[in-house]
Amino acid sequence: MIMKNHTLWSLGLLLSLLFAVACSSDSDEPVPSPIEPSVELTAGECGSYTLTFTLTPANATQAAWLCVKGGEKIPSALEVLDRGEQVSASAPTTHTLTELEAECRYTIVAAVAREGLTATKQLQMTTSQAQAPAQSHAVILFMQGDNGLESFMDTNLQRAITAYYQLPEGSRFVIFYDRGNYTRLTELYMDDGMAKQRLIQEYNTELSSVDPDFVKEVFELIKQEVEVDTYGLILSSHGGGWVPSDIFDTYLFYDWEGSTTAAYAPSPLFYAQDGYDCMEIADLVTAIDTFHYEYILFDACFMASVEALYDLRHSADYIIASPIEVMGEGFPYEEILPLLYREDHGLRLSCEAFMELYEGRSGAISLIDCAKLESLAQAMRRVVAANDGTIDVAQIQGYESFPIHLYYDLEQFVEQMTDDEALRSDFRAALSEAVRFADHTPTFCSTSYQEFVLDLPRSCGLNCHVEREEFPATHAAWLETAWAKAVGAR
Image (cartoon, rainbow, N blue to C red):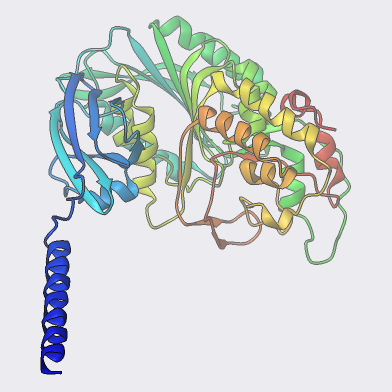
């Protein structure tokens, strides 16, 4: 009996030891270390306004990069991965930064991640000294200001003259200004270190600066006086995008409290104002066609109108315009003019300077590639063909304060026209090609009906017309536009 108990006890002890050894053996096995990601940055060419680099990730499932200027704070890996440019995590990619500042240091920060582990790499690169443009260039500042904008234009003219001191030697800068009490065509030049205006032509103030024949004559005179390789144009006045001038006035003076239907005869589309006269879009296209412009910059309201831009698509390579109202302060001319004389014309940087000026206030700006507007029209045509007529207008961003909007967001309009994700994706791809840059403040101010501050959570950068049954004449006029015909509207 004692022997039996002893044997059982010995057997139990042996089993306990074996179990302990087994447990000890399991716990002592090495745990595989997680695979750490890594990233390399390789410098490429450094131009005056461009930088090229290659990002090579390894053992990563996510990769991104950011570029910071000068002494700006270097972002963390998580910040880069969250808001940086996302790239392939499995293969090297080469990137070219454009529209940078000459002789400026930039830091490229790359970050990669895998299973909660991150790694970063920094690369400092400096752009080279600015080179004189290979082609001579002239900027034409065309200000039609006999319309209540005189004080703003006076200030902008002084800013432009201040900027002239920063321009490359030999830069040609032409100014047309209808102020109401005088109408002049001048050219800036340097005399003993001072910027002065050479009078080219003084005009009778009784002449309308929005008369297309008159404007055509002005541009023909500029061609005779200022011969350069390329031209850029800044148009400064009131603006209404595609909308006919009489229609705009009807909305402006409409009895929103007491009327429900508007009856009037439509007139052509409008841009610019001299007194009570307006220039229509078709006339503008004809009046300025003396040159093909590297860019047209509209210092005017609502001119990022897809219908108006489509009419102007052959007039310039690029157009800068706003889908909303532009504040009277206009553009920061002292900053953008030196950019416009760069070889790449600094168009994106000019848009960014505009947004910096209006940060915390009201602003929206777009950079449009005119060569891509035909493809955008074709993508829109496919959307229009698929539309069943069911549109919730309340879900589309309006761009002014009229109770019934004249201008709506183009992308949000498309989203209401079709649920087909393939069509939407196709349209967005065409839109991103046509609108090379777009930015906006979170809210915007509109004084079209009453002064309102409105939310602007989204903006594709282009405004457009949406049919409203309350204003049949507006839609009838829109159907006559080249854009409406191109997209197969009915």
